[in-house]
Image (cartoon, rainbow, N blue to C red; front, side):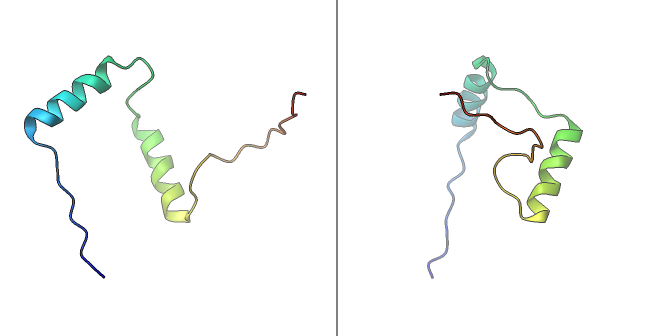
Length: 60
């Protein structure tokens, strides 16, 4: 199997990426609790949405 190679962005590209992220109103920084919860989900093998006990009623 070929080895994966990841090309990291240059400092200039990284700055442009971070600037675009900061300008996007839909993005936000995760707090420590949120990061911990995501790490716990990754360890448990869960992926995707958080578990929710609410029943979703389809709208027709």
